[in-house]
Length: 437
Image (cartoon, rainbow, N blue to C red; front, side, top):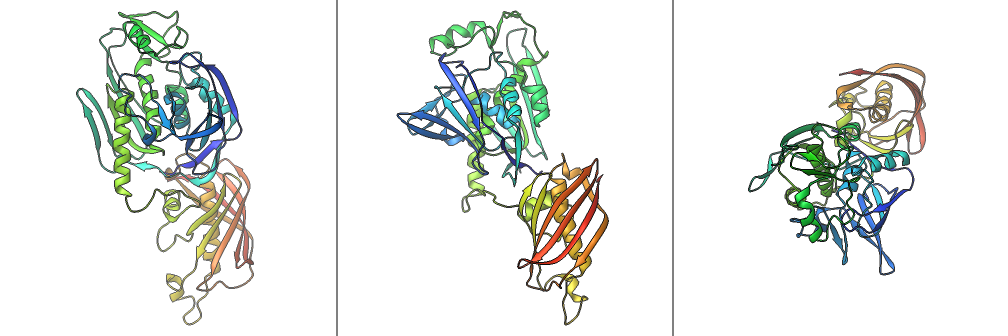
């Protein structure tokens, strides 16, 4: 699985009322540098306080509060789960979330569609670097009474949620989906916040739900929907539970690869499960800190390129502008197998392999711009205007700079140059075709 870091292209904002505090609120989404993560910025006591959206900043007193909070430097913000759900569901890994008020404004109709539309309107841009993600390698389980959360290995991010409410309108519901931006937008984001009518008074006595209305929350009373509306999906209730769970899983601080299965879970148990995952991640990386990529390493390259020894000829991607250009490196050593025969006593890298390496760097550019690259191959289909200016020998580091000239359907044309120590050693126009693997 390959995921690229993404942020919003420009600042956008929304105003409204907090769901639980009932106070005025304004939220702004702003572009962030690679490796920033999701970061709330709150103005308090005359200064800006940054609160990273990570599980370490979630307090332990969520039980019964019906929302997820973050605390840092004495500042507490409430009900962050819907904002984080929209960002995580749309694949945004880096964003500064400026918040005026104690909690984000609740969208008028109680779902995250308004947030999704706001983010989409801002533009979601690839930042050209792989995202560090959390991969479930073995089952991880959390239980508390009849509450269950379990994560199992999977090559994608999948979520299954099961609920069982005593109210006949809700009853038993189960839903499974692959969490991709289009799926999130169409199948999860429209689902609305809901509550049983008998719980409303309890919430208000706790000081919660002060901003709740029949417009921004579904109220259920003995098998009847109190609101003057219809359900958007027959299983809208369990879909909203997935929406909340995705927001709470965002507190891992990185995308997730695995299948998360939840039964009867709420925010407190979601947070406990996320803490369990985070502890597992820290145990696995107790010596080395979590990687913050500034380039594509060989592991990231191998997620999109099928080549392997002895024909994987790119070691690092330094720069990548999706759909535009890419810069990659090939370190040439005497251990290259082709030097055995080309030529004994006078090792020179074959021109055809320099061209192949250039094409592979271009292949990373091409594969990173398509969905599900692991299901595709790039066929090298043509070379024009190839020129070779000087030999490449052991100890050289080749810098390839490849630009996209034209792409139409599965066929593309790229122009590449190869340099050693800033000196041009080769250039060519390359044609490639994307095919199913």
